[in-house]
Length: 106
Length: 143
Image 1 (tube, rainbow over the protein chains, first blue to last red):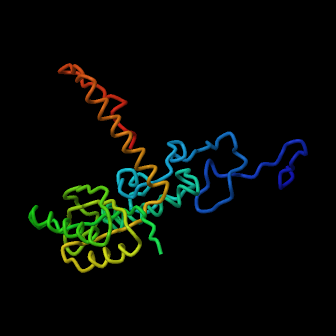
Image 2: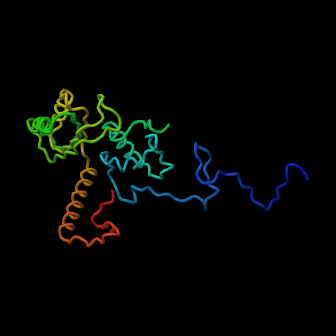
Image 3: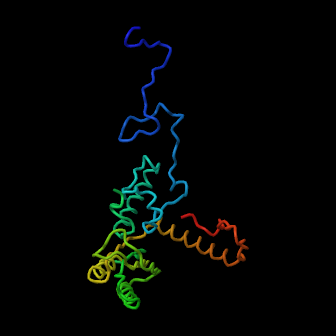
């Protein structure tokens, strides 16, 4: 057996890709197009133009257990709504409706 | 120079350890500042006592108040100065409501009116004692 194993010209070479979405800024999983689910922005679906900072129940869903804002590549929010969401979350934090840091999680 | 009157929204937190009449007095004083400076209070909603997500001035809860008002630009500086000086107001936030925010408010008001009208018109559903009835979909706005 010759080493490295010979690749036949007919088979297409596929780069190994991480399953699903890549975290930490890895290369995009463009090869697994059948696996990747197209996630739509939930605010666009609900046709919401204004994200209210007073609605802390709604906002707490967009914030992690530690209290950090969940990045948009995980939630699938569109850029426009993510900017509005960030402003709303920061206002809610100022008014103590949301914590800055959740110390309860060790 | 003609002043443009914008709609503003302020949320402020009053010291919860005061008595109810004292809290009302603090709120009235804030309203007076708005009215004295040629403003017009559109809406005032008292949320009541709420727990903080983190302690503010060593306290764990406060009395939240939301006030929507119209006024000129110079009113805002005076109102914020009043909030700063008032000892019993722990935090405040004043924002200008833009077109989208106003539309969202109007839409929410419409929905609330419709829901109230619907609840008033339909008779109360018969709830069997053992099986819990599902919530009526029209009355619950999607939060």
